[in-house]
Length: 126
Figure 1 (tube, rainbow, N blue to C red):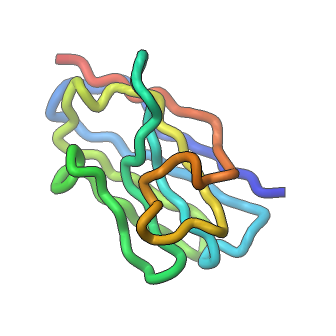
Figure 2: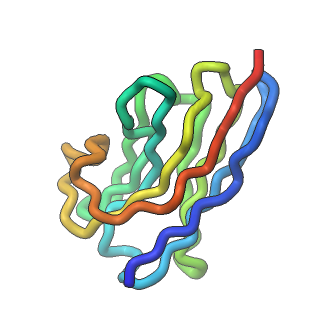
Figure 3: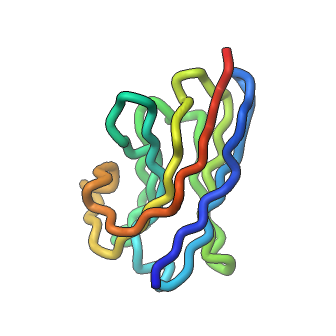
């Protein structure tokens, strides 16, 4: 079974940093698109950053470019989201997701992902 275990959320002041981790199991890591989505209260779930399995590219939402960095440790089947210069508007529940059939142009679309980890809350105070 595909399993995704997310961790690393918390409360931080604006300008601070957090690192989220997503440990994956049950599938061939390199064959799946994998990344992070977030959902703030009253808003739709949105793509934050994802790795493409088809061409190795990385998607970043415009709102996080230059502040967030997605990385992976293939030996540990784990992806990380380093979040720097956090802003109050980054406050949301962050979810890790993976799927084997996501094309590069659809990385940001949560509807393309069948497998989801539990969310982890990130709260940024002003």
